[in-house]
Amino acid sequence: MNDELADKNRDVSSLYSDLNNFVNSTKIGIIMVDNNLKIRRVTPMIERVMNVLTSDVGRSISDFKLSIDVPT
Image 1 (cartoon, rainbow, N blue to C red):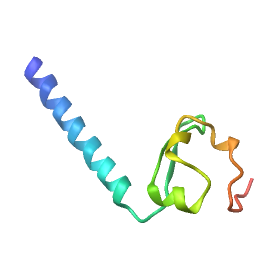
Image 2 (cartoon, rainbow, N blue to C red; image 1 turned 135 degrees about the horizontal axis):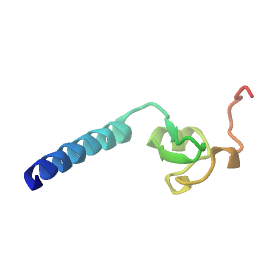
Image 3 (cartoon, rainbow, N blue to C red; image 1 turned 60 degrees about the vertical axis):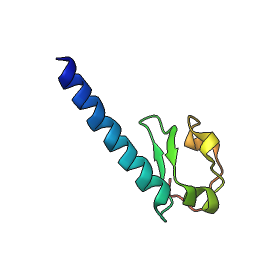
C-alpha cells in the first residue's frame, strides 16, 4: 500500500512539474481561474499583456479592470 501511494505521489509530482514547465515556457497569455473565478495561476506572458501578477493568485478576476473588452 505504501509503495502504491509513493508511486502515485511520484506520478502527480511529475505531472505537476510538466504543467509548471509548460506554463512557464509558453508564449501564450493564460489566466487560470477556479469555479469562483478566483485566480489560480497566470503565465509570464499574461503579466506583460495585462495588469495581473503572480502575486494576484487567490484574488477574484472581477477585482481587475482588464485592458481588453470582455462580453458580459
